[in-house]
Image (cartoon, rainbow, N blue to C red; front, side):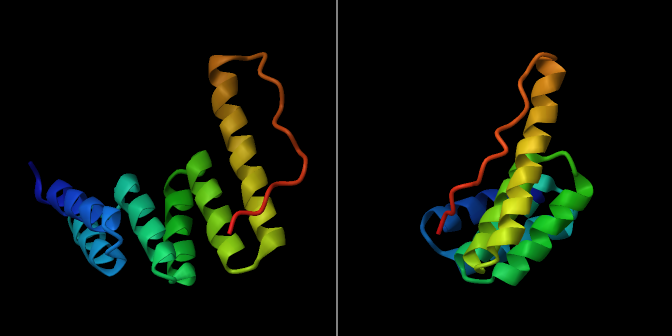
Length: 125
């Protein structure tokens, strides 16, 4: 098993035990070996947010969006992180982007897929 995978798995273990600071260190170690690894970036952003570093989480998830602008999960995470900062209009915009990205993926499989619901989102705390 490669070194970056070992760090990542260690980070997941720490995260699962609520050890967010240790998880962040492990995910950063994985990213030193493989800087653009989307799974590790997603995990790092989530651990940062859970540790209270919402600005760090937003910066990390922005990197994911730069690398993969069609990733609905990245926009969903961005929305959650923005909600945690109390930035509700920005969170709603991010969630709309998540719905649109998800719909685009669905259209590739099902060209007749209906457009996403454009109604208001439910705020998650």
